[in-house]
Length: 68
Image 1 (cartoon, rainbow, N blue to C red):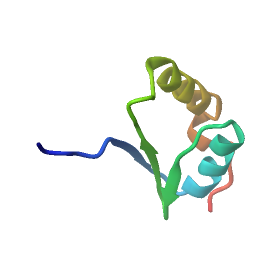
Image 2 (image 1 turned 90 degrees about the horizontal axis):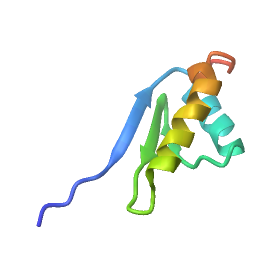
Image 3 (image 1 turned 180 degrees about the vertical axis):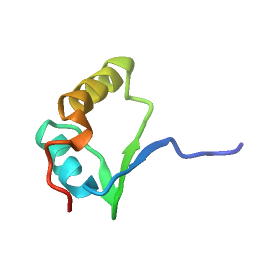
């Protein structure tokens, strides 16, 4: 059986600031340098994904956050 990872990644200069803003909204992820990394597990459902995108939209993809 082949296993694969299930990550969604975004490259952005302010990844650390966006990570902190998302964690403050109870969205857990990690960043690596200038990359945001979202992991999807079996317990993540459509409502969780919809909430993630609503929060990202409210942040305007980090437009209000300082570039780190």
